[in-house]
Image (tube, rainbow, N blue to C red; front, side, top):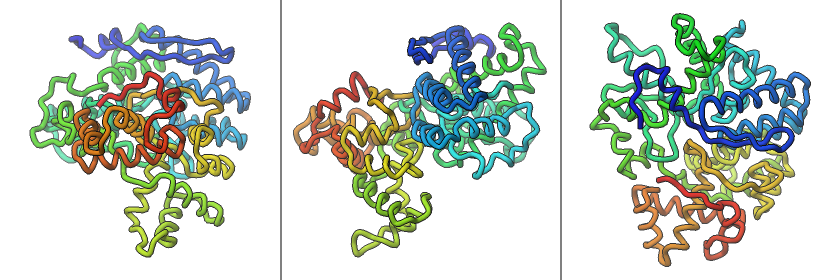
Length: 451
């Protein structure tokens, strides 16, 4: 913890320890802002050159290394699909035009037809391809700008409904990234509840705001031209947004997130724990394959309707239940919709090859925990494997999950363990007794979960 005066001083404390491999397979490491500037400069040059040349192989590799730098992996299947179809470069070029801060495009052009996916990884790809200073808009950046706007509203003499509602997302630990958790704070819409195109629009809006602010000040003048100054400002938001408690604002007494730092039950209600929506993973995968083989139009809405119309049992699932069964299909988990049929069949078969296909990686690299609450299914496998190693009875395993802060109630802990068992056994990470396998040890090598 450091005391700073003015946002420019925050940059001195920028830290993001990352490593990736360049086109020659040489590692590129970074941690400070100076390191990160050089690292991102290399990634930006690699991506821009590949996209401009229409080199799908190099464009894909550059994108994958950007995700590796950022510690995120949700967009990997989507990027592989575009590259396999020969559409990755053209899609990124199209998005670059729509998201440029200096372009003539209207925000309304960022709609459901133009923005096919968006998440904490793709915001990095789009920001690095942009030459105008478009910010990386992840949960930290969204949390920080949302908090600053919330504080501005509290000091402003005007009134009326807030004009801005910067979205954010939950951290994987006990940090607070929602301004609504604080006294008189404005609650931030969560990434999980907004559309892909809405997230993209907020990235552009934030870029415009940062540009306008820097054009009226000499902040970060030593960083270079306006785009470089914009990224320096964004880096400061990134640091401030790690945990909004750094602003020193009292937590709201009636806020569910107020006790998030110490109360696991509050974390669970606030969506920051590791409790998933319950779903029978293997069964739903098989159902989805049957749905795809039927020739139906592939979409979440159609699959949900298909589940209701084609129940496994006499009692069909409700639409809400069928929606919940799609938990693992989101881009934050395995991004299963629109997968090539051959890949989907491999995922349904499971085992190590199924896991590799689900993660869309040619080789199975060790799992890493990023900064945000994503890949809940796989984290639940890790928690479940550890629970079965530590405890011999069902009640003792539930007690372990509760005491570690992964869930707040017995029912929630049982849901977590049920999903962990199902996903773990499907991919061969857990054996028939739900104990860790050799693959588990290799995949989760040295990985620890923050409560």
